[in-house]
Length: 275
Image (cartoon, rainbow, N blue to C red; front, side, top):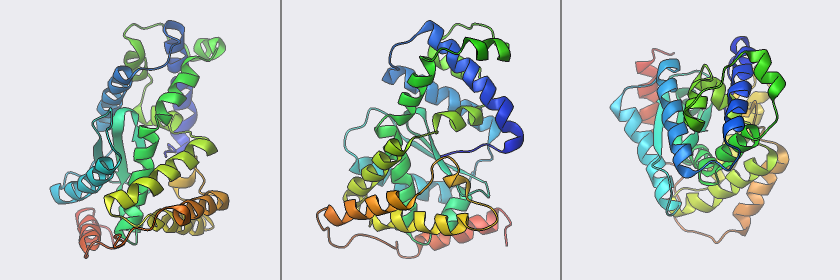
């Protein structure tokens, strides 16, 4: 769920379009699990150059443990999920290929309960588990984009899908494109979160309340980045509430986590010198 900043967006996305089209020239078949793993590695390397990561072990462990809870509850997975905390004041979280999940510090700070943050993470895991990123890549890889290739001036490269993705000129540009999900994919990721969160011990209503909070913020002067390409519309919220109501009732689901989230939020504020 990502939007890069406007001053970089147009040129970066032109490079993304051209590079993905070049991949389609060489290989028009579905992207394999192995190819997606290569893509994930390539993007992760680029992200390390482009993003400001939080290197505090306590904060990272908190997010990773929450993510691990969600992944375990999701059943057997083909990817080895990894979770990262990015120091950024935009409310955002996004999934990269092969289970690399990035959560902004502002998202953690805005969460009013552990279940809200778990809902965000579960939604992103859903995009990976349902292979929405791979589907986006496939659609673009198979497109006929000769005009864009010539306009971007990008030469043919060897190295398969991962090599072409690495040549895009920025991991953020790639994620802006690959996280452009349609309504059906968003609803599917929501349904995934509703199904998995109770098995992980979290109240799925946290996903709904987080989206409702974001919609309220969107009415202000600056809408959250999280909603830029993935709007949390009223019908999505209604559908998620209906799915929760139709799910078997599970006792003792967590909303709060005994103050742990509040400790992490305070630690973020102290480490990033925010007031």
